[in-house]
Length: 247
Figure (tube, rainbow, N blue to C red):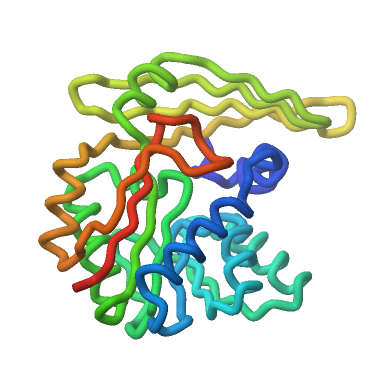
């Protein structure tokens, strides 16, 4: 069993090539202009992965700091930023124990990043630290998976991805009692005439709106908008997109 994302990182962009990152970055930029037009241009990108959103936000004039737990992901993100002649700061950190300094005008966490915090105390710690990093009036935007997505879309379903020199079998198991979803990933990578097999396990946890809203309130955030869909992104009802402003 390999560490999470150690194999997936190199194939992540290929697997996500159909995702509309530009629509997501436009959504972020519009929200910042609406709710925090005077905030500093410093932006935190939590769970930045291979840095696609970081790059799009940097191209819009934001001074981006990307945070991720995977060194493999960050290595790819740094290479992409350099290839685009962009200065983006990346740091390998657990977002639950964020230590990125203060003075940020905005923070984002894309693609259900907060759901990877599988203990409530980790969720509380993360949101509290985001609050401490933002200026008053700064905006925090994130998306989380809904109960419907875990119980009806992921549930105990399987997915298969067959790419050139790469094959991924993805099996889900959702525990209705703990409200945690295990993703069992089996990779096959072509190596000459042979195929190398490896496995990873990732875990997410469902958090209700009641829980998230309470944590946000306790961390001095006002919820400005919750949407169950964003044009060009996930299907209606599978995610909740939050826009929050620090009081």
